[in-house]
Length: 86
Image (cartoon, rainbow, N blue to C red; front, side):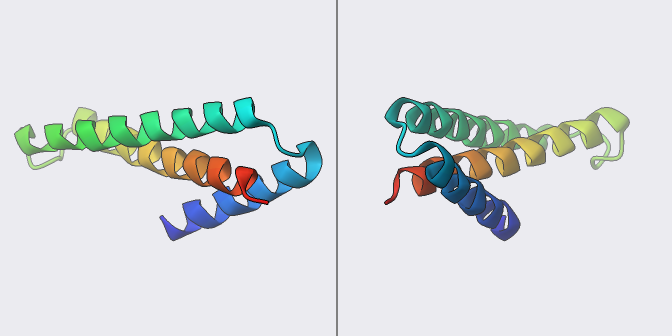
């Protein structure tokens, strides 16, 4: 997650330098990031009902998708925060 936050900070600062303050874009990126984080957190609760200790292909793919949603959500949220900070 530290890497995701660092990448988000860099992207946000580059966006601020290149495009300036864009309130609507910042808000949409923040909403997208929050949505992915919430989806990842809720989907992770489904991990309690795994069937074969997480060994089936479906369970491995599900875990990978949830992990990626959390990472991308973190990046987008940090981009939104760092983009709006002057």
